[in-house]
Image 1 (spheres, rainbow, N blue to C red):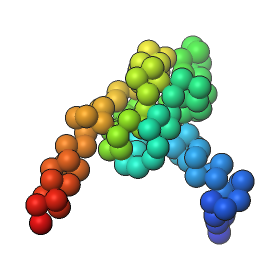
Image 2 (cartoon, rainbow, N blue to C red):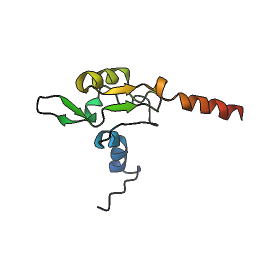
Image 3 (tube, rainbow, N blue to C red):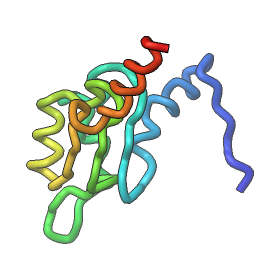
Image 4 (cartoon, one colour):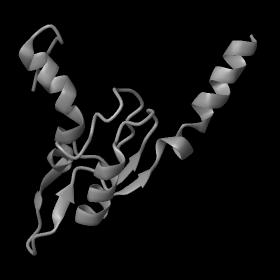
Length: 108
C-alpha cells in the first residue's frame, strides 16, 4: 500500500487530520496537541469502532493519556468511561512534564 498524502489546505485533508484519532486502533491514545475540546459530547461517539456481540461499545483505544490541555471535554470523558470503560488520565495529571519543561525554558 502506497498510502495517501493529504494536505490541510483541502477539505479532505482537514477532515483526515481532524478525524485521525477516531480512525486508528491503538493500545493507548496520547493526544499531545490540538484545540481545547477537540473531543466533546457532539463527537465523542466517533471514537467507537462499533459494538461487540452483546451491544457494548468498542473504543479505538481503551486508554487515553491527555498530553494536550483540555483535548477532551469533561462531559465526553464521562461518556467515554460510562459507555465503553475507557480509562482517561486527565491533562492536569498527564502533562506535568510539559509544565516543568516550560518553567525551565522561561528561566533559561
